[in-house]
Length: 617
Image 1 (cartoon, helix red, strand yellow):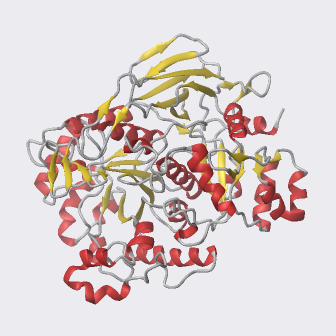
Image 2 (cartoon, one colour):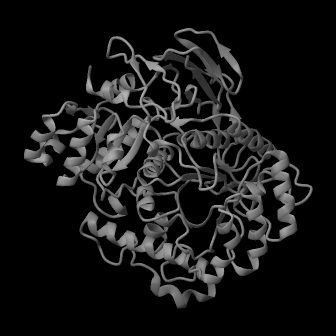
Image 3 (cartoon, rainbow, N blue to C red):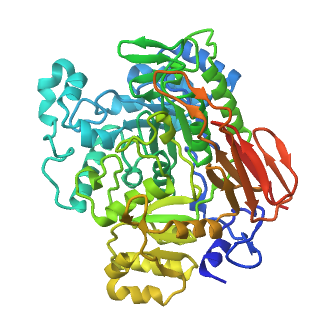
């Protein structure tokens, strides 16, 4: 029996969850998924919560209107948290005292200077005392450090942004600006270690300013693993807006959540190239478009909310929802079509067990990699090596092709199409760093080393342990060369594979791993084979069996300042071939049951998500 199959045996659920059996196509017979998934793989909710939190973005600043809104949210099943809620300041204490009795988590915004080291955003003891009742009641709070990677690299030297931010105080604070052309650094760094040290110092300084209660929210960067390492209470992402690389960012965040045992969250922004979704008819306000038909499509919001939940997020935040879910943000709090859809989605989340994201492959980057897709340079400034380029190509041209609209214009007639992409191999990947614990790395059936790796003795020992516990190790000839004589130690153990060289015709560059080898990984490691029209899919393990999410991102055309157009003919024809023994199958949203057939054929409408659950006997 091959090593991958042995490792797959080690996956199951804790606490005696059902033991399904899976047939691996590369191996004759059935392979049982009977052993527990490590506790570190369980979805991490926000402290004090047992399920995913769905928030309203914004809250009234006075107590009585806030109480009205909470009652509406409870009556309409519209959510169970605020992101953001009130700012933590002494005058807000009565509001937080009330919210402590409700038990809903609250994220706080400190103000416009939140990202500036040495600016006006530092918070003091008086601010923190306003949260005393929340702390006493065990209700989670955090203070947002938003878009800090984008600030560090792009806004730190931008005088126009500083003038807008500081106004009449610009001359007092302009000495804090960074030199132009240095991506936020005071001088040009010479190594990844130096970049890491500078960015870490910046983050820790801001965390101290924000009472060490930081929820990190990164948009135009892939620094989620570092936020977890450096102490963020929650590892947050902003998606939507004009932000690319949605799915690779989720893989980074979920891996960081598991590595550092921190919850992670997704904030879905309605901004879209000068347009923003809000209540009311489509209209122009200055140069920007506003209204329910401005910004992103309602179909995208629904797909993104559901996918973030299914992917394991502890909190999903529909940005600007206080101005989108209601006709007016005041009594009688009448819901718009977006508010009605949000209530439907939240009720769906609350009534279904999403299970645990099944990600058998760890893509392992060096601890100091500083991957930054937005700037296409490690740590935003270093020239990429061949190994760095392989990382970009893996995410942008193989796993999530068409997801980069920053450096290309992949879909000019439908710019929203790049935000969520079909997944040729499913979303079966977490991103880990070489700083991950031996237990964490050993938890993955497959370890795929990626990019330039510094092989110290500690890492080699981790890889040896993972191999001894049944993991497979995939590495490139460049990694073999970097290992030197230590490669012989690994090669003595079963499961080591040096990947064959392959040039990707889509890039004309040498790839980390071939498409054929990725296809084989999916066949060997996933309990359901997916074929048919291009589709985005992810598989989770539940207490009853398995659930597969199918997302058809085709068929909805959306431009920022125009209503969405749906092509009814863009229905995806999907075929599922389970490799598991199951007693019954049911699609959650339609409640349609399927007879025990192999294969299962189903249709997913344009811009729609489906969830097929396989109940194990």
